[in-house]
Each structure stands twice: as structure tokens, then as C-alpha cells.
Length: 88
Length: 429
Image (cartoon, rainbow over all chains, first blue to last red; front, top):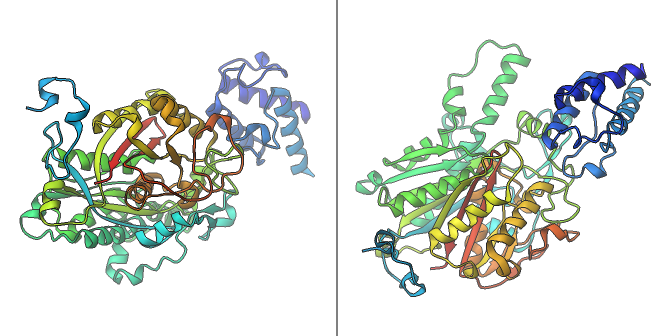
């Protein structure tokens, strides 16, 4: 399941960044992928819709959110956690 | 011949307007405010609202309306004790969305204070221009719910005349017999400032003698707040403009309406003049649909000063756009710092949205009351909720307590989503 979550997130981010999913590395930051603040909000919405979860994210204080958006890897880990919590 | 037409450089002396002179040094009509009215979360009239500004009172509370439990943002500056039946009859309530009700109440207060009667010739030279972003949003929300959620196939015949954005302006024109230019401006968070600026220009140019102007918003309903939630710029706990720990904006509701009048006619009839409107400028960022630009804001600020013939040093107070979002507040401070240079460290700038919330299309109108209070009463409304200094907002934001200070000229900023900026300059008469 985890691989599915990861690959689906990469597909969603790739669509936002206008790249191919295999160009999205775990280390990449949203900025490096060319995703601006509105793009990030849009990506988070797409992820919420895909997995039917609620992501705690406030664009005013992204660094303080419980949802770590610093890299693709941290985003994937946080979404996996939320998906697992939902399943539990 | 005016300096503008001759192209001669304006000297300081030529800009000085005598205590009563119907024209500006540029040969334009002067414009004054002779009436004000409001309803917002801080009060149902101007006196109560100004008292709340002086006492640094916060109007932000837990929201109370249908389905609020399904929102992740549940605070707002809501008018809780609103009873339309105290002001309107049954037929009027059926025809007036809440944003129209708020507008009519504020307009009646303003016209009452101005003491004007629009019967006869004056009505032909008078109009109304108002700002709103959402118009009859509660009407949309209620009727979508009826047809989509409840499966009804019939709606009330007044749905369209109730929800249209110009409903409030039209009802004001009908209420007072204003038969001149009337329309509604929708520029999101700058709607009221754009409306008031246009009203000012119409009187200054001689196109109208009196204009009712300002704006209103009634967006605090399930759909109205749900839409804002999507952007993730709303705070869940408080509006703390300029504070390092600010975490977003908080919506409000209500209206502000003013009587703008040709100075000569106001003076001749011995009207009590609240302030003079001396300048207005608009600019567009032409950049991003949500992220503000310091350059765009600065052009509107400098443009308003230049339109008013004021030096930056003459501005004592700015009512900030100050939404409490990370992006707006630092961008606005950068724009002010750049436009005013060293004087930025001497002027006061506060965001009253910390008290009455962000009234979106109506916000500039309620905020103009703080400008009038500064000029007339010598009291500067505070930025409340201020907790931690932010090096990116290093201006005198009048934190948490109102301050006594004499100021002669002020600005009111409004910077809308879509990059549309509108700044108004007022002066003490």
C-alpha cells in the first residue's frame, strides 16, 4: 500500500510541476520543482481528495504546520501517516 | 489657470488651501465627508464602533450559523445580535439580502447625520457607488442548499433581485431618491476603497454634488467561509496583523456608508464636516492572482499622495490593509517603508481588522472610520492581538492600545486579490 501512496503522490506532484513522476526525487523541495505557494495549496488539495484525508496546513506558517512540506520525502511520509491513521 | 493645465511645477505655497476655498489649487472641486454610518461586529453605529476602537475591543467570536460544525475555520467577526425585523418590514426582509440590510442601515445613519434631503434638484445631482465582493452570498447559499441538498424544484421569486451585487446600491438610490450615477464595484478586498475613490472623483470633477459611498459584505455563511478555507490563509484562533506569530486572516461582516459632498455646498449649508477627501490612486500589480506585490502597493500609496498634493511627511497615520496573513503584512510594510523613506519610522500604521475582521468588499468603508477618528478625535485605533515583533514589519503599528495623537492627514490602504490596489487620502478640515 505504501508504494501505491508514494507513487500516487508523485503522480499528483508531477502533474502540478509539469514533470514526469520519475523526475520527482524524495529530496526535492517544492521550490526546486517550481511549485509556488498557490501550487502547493493546490497539490495538498489534490492529495486530500485522492486519499480522503485532511491535511493540517496553513499557508501563513508552513514551517509550523504538523504537516512537514520541506521535501517530497517528508510530504510522502506525512501523507502515509495520515492514510494509516485513517485506516486504523 | 490651474497648475495642472499650465504644467507649472506646484510649489508648497500654491498647494496650501485656505480654510474655505471651493476649489483645489488645480481648479478642481473639493470633496468632504458630512455623514457616516456603519454596522459591524463592534457595533450597530459609528459611536459604538469608535468606542470599541478606543477600547481595543475585539469583535471576533465563535461563528454561529447553520452547518458551522462542518467548517475547519469557526471564528469570525460576526454580527450576532442582528434582528432585521427591528429595522425592516416583512416585505422588505423578503427582498433584502443581509448585505443590503446592512447597507441600508448604515446609509440611513449617514444621511441622517449629513441632514440632507434629496427631493427636488439635489436628487438629480446625487448618486451612490458601493463596493461588495460577494453581494447576496447568503441568498446564493440558502437557495443552492434548497435546490441541491433539499431537492426542491422551486425558489422564491426574489432570488435574483436579492442576490445581485448591485441590489444594495439600487435600494439606497430608491430609499433616498438618488437619481444620478449609481453602480457597484467588485474588486475583492479593495471594493470599498475603489468605490469611495470613484465617488470622490465624480464630485471633484463636477459630475455629482453628493455621493453615498462605502460598501458592505455578508459572507459569513457556510459556503462563504468554506470557500475561504480552501486557500488555507485563514487563522483558526485570532487575527494578529504585523505580529511575528500571525497565522492568517479572520473574516468579518457589515457595512460602512458615507456621504461625500461638494465642499462648497456643505459649507454653504453649514454642515458638520468630518474630514476632507483629498486624494485617491489605483494601481494593478499585473503579476499574480493571490500574491501581493510591494511595487504595486507602493505605486498606489505614492499616487494617492501625489493626487492629494501631500508630502509624505504630512501623513501621520495609515490605516493598513493589514490582513494578518504572512504575505500581505510584510509586503505592505515594505511598500510603506519604500514610499515614505525615513518618515516611515515616524508615522503610525495600524490594522483595525484585528478588531472588526476582514469585511472583504466592505472592509475599506469600516476602516475609513478609523481614519476619521484619527483626524477628528486625535485618537489612533490600535492593532490588537499584537504579541511578537516581526523584523519584516518593523513600523509603529500602534500595538494593542489606542493612542492620542494629533494628525493632519491620513491614508487608507486596500490591496485586493488579483493585484488591484486602491489608496485614499483624507485631511482634517
